[in-house]
Amino acid sequence: MGMTMSQKILAKHAGLEEVQAGQLILAKVDLVHGNDITTPVAIRELDKIHGEGVFDKEKGSLCYGSLCAQQGYYLCQVYSDLQKLC
Image 1 (cartoon, rainbow, N blue to C red):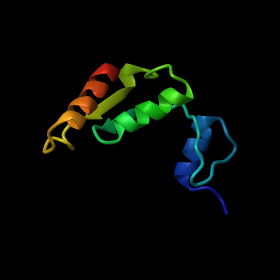
Image 2 (image 1 turned 120 degrees about the vertical axis):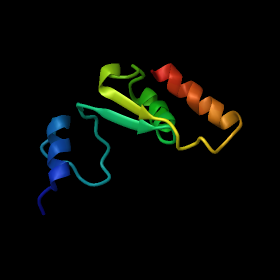
Image 3 (image 1 turned 60 degrees about the horizontal axis):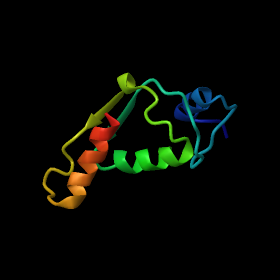
């Protein structure tokens, strides 16, 4: 079966002939968007892969607010991590 449109786009940006569901790839992207829940996890995982930080701070956006109802140490740590990224 052929690739979906999303798979074709990802394959092209990763320099691959094809990609499959569940496959991890490194791709050149035009824009990165994250939120306060998933971005800290993604940052830690990307640092394990290449540890070079953000590819281009002008091509990224973060949305704060998902954790606003929570209080305490975890929330402070998340926002501290996100501020370091920016």
